[in-house]
Image 1 (cartoon, rainbow, N blue to C red):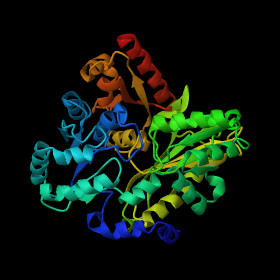
Image 2: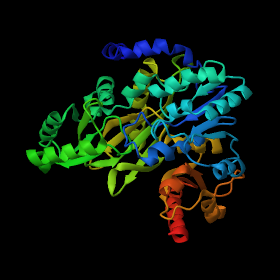
Image 3: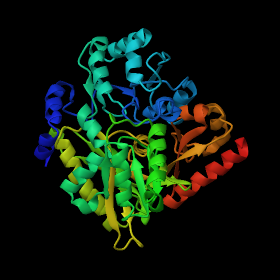
Image 4: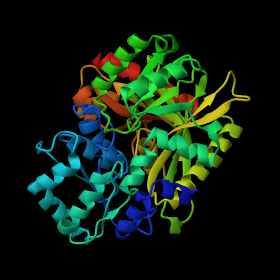
Length: 467
């Protein structure tokens, strides 16, 4: 399988050889220090989207260990760093804020190299750690690898990479390529039914063709995330040529897609979805052993916009479905590992049917990066030594009045989890709070039902306090 994919994508073998000196032999227990940089420019999103390009950077603290360095544009985070160290007993890790905006909001990697102050601070930090440093980015796109090479001089040694090579990163995060992989590795019945389109004419034709086989057609940017590059088309519109063309042309202009971008994905929108489990995986260096499935989680989506992810919790799927997901996830992960993938990865699925008994399973997307489930998962793991030993769920809390992080901490009071085991609310990714009024909240409980119910309790309590 991997040989076939390398023949179809010869750049994979070229990059694997070229980047071999930056791949640690041991990734699961990396002994050095890490630089965490969550640059989202490898994901197709609007350049001015604050969620991706400024806010989500503070997610990196969920995985940043003792002595690690997080670099971002998240604004001052002193209160959050104190919370991690004093309340949760984690860290301390360091934070370096990049203020230089010359490279644009979306390009954090290049901004680091334009900031002389930042380079001096990185050099000082690396010197204190003996120069044994790895870059652990949100995802391993080309700018991440270029930054690692540039940091060699700053850090005084070869900076290792805890991420897949750039071409493989781009492929696994492309929905169309992933559908091809699923079809080859598992069979076409486990992939989404759909096509690709490379221009507006082809897009209109593909949507019209699917209108005879689907109630709703989904058109997506192949390399986007979290519903940001999605439009849903009713089958009836798919049969009205002029109106369909106008609608699609307007959407293309809105999301900034061009013919130089990856081809668009045109899919049948499944309407009988019972659940959307996601399998979280760590793929180590091939010499370390097989991929590790960290867990399977049920994803939650906005009831007003089912394409937008809002949280996740430990899966409640029957054992037969979970076992099937795990078995097939391992098969897909092994192929990626043979292609040179290392690091965090997840596979999103949908379970379709009238009931769970006899339901069908489809793999819809590979997230070759850290995300909204893996980040809270690893934070829970660090706090409880095993994320599977506690019932927990993660969601996004929206607060219209945008309080400061310290105000939110005071409002939650004794409900906040402490390192002595008291409390049941854990806060994560605070940079979104002042920017757009949201923060990630993890709740734990004696069972999964209580953990989920406590999400509602927190929302209602904060609404009463802040409006």
